[in-house]
Image (cartoon, rainbow, N blue to C red; front, side, top):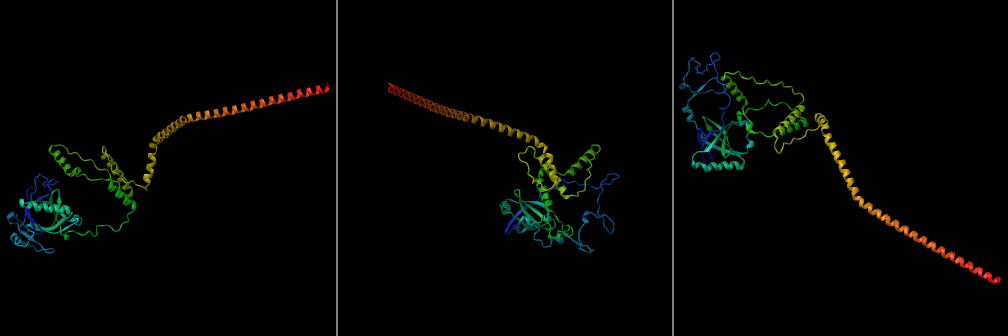
Length: 374
């Protein structure tokens, strides 16, 4: 890159010689020239004097200053401007170090890369860069470039120091009359807006490109080839948004679908806070219920099969127990029958013994009677 300004950074008593390079390129943006429509010739801009109406050559063009609110123009020469005291003409003087959040983005202007100018500037340059990065601060100073003084902000960026030209505070217009009056925002609307913000995900700089410039290049290429330019598809009519909450919900759903399509094949998908308390979500739930019937039936079948299997196992486990119970009952029954038989046998023996005694007594009595009669 070609250096556009050489100077130095004044950091206390430390001086760092630097070269300045443009950090942005605006030549890639679309630009048009003015032509004469009848013959296509480019229109030239000529410097015409308002007094005599004649064209003025470049060597006769000078500078003049017109005070605000005055019609008088005061001529000012380059020699007079060069004699003006401007200590920042070749030196960027650092005034303080502040947090980056203290700088309003409205003040940011053109950006430049600063590089060390010479081997002696390498170490102090690296020291300032490391201090800015490690301390999390940005440096604020003043510098004069291209004939005017402006504020400047220095910050560490990808191993280099970047200088942002800043607008003066009085160059920032107030926002009075722009913002609307007090508006009441409902809690669910704010929640939906935050959910939509989270659903959009992160920004991939690689996907950012100037679609308008590409369309212009395609148009020009078609005209050079003698082809009829393809008319772009007309956008559909946009419906007027009446219900802010409904529009937010639709936006969240669209963002979810977009994130789902972009996340195919990835291991993780973005999580979105579910939306509750809306009739739309309540109506959507019954529509998904029929799709869950088949899994419920399968689950019921699985439960039935499991219960049957459990019952079979229970029956198998209880079979030995029943067999043992039957054996125990049989044993008890056999013991009872044996006891009964013994008791019956004892009764029978006792009966026979009593009958014998009775018969013996009868025989003795008969014998006694016979003796008395004899």
